[in-house]
Length: 162
Image (tube, rainbow, N blue to C red; front, side):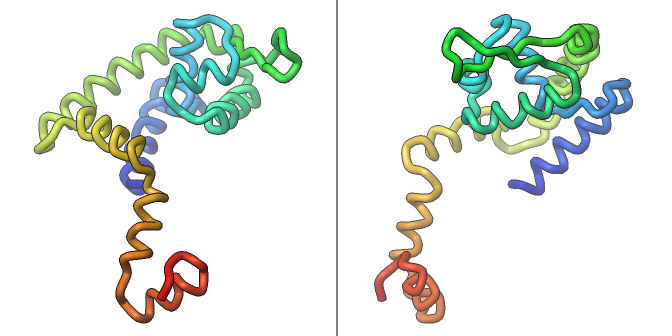
């Protein structure tokens, strides 16, 4: 999965560079689009809007801040940081929106070649992982392991009993 994500993300990044977006990263687009839709927002609200963890949103916002795409201000609660698009990011919006539209069209074309719709498959995977995390599944698989060499390693790590 990681290899596939690297390939897809890398191709979008190359396309972004061709559009003149420089060191803009594809992972910034969901944040930009959320800020356009919601206006200045807390990192927590952004994380919720783009369906990522607070940590992932915070890391992305930090990268965007270093590139001059967003500013961070203290919110009503001193622990809260409010994210706002900069004039630089706002000037890039037409190009970002064009890239988003072209990417969506390319994904639809890719999906036409797949035996199952990519969006539906990813949503089904997400629902399954929300029901029972991969970590829980790993623990169950470790407990069910019967290979003596593997069970010794797993038992030494406290992940299964012999």
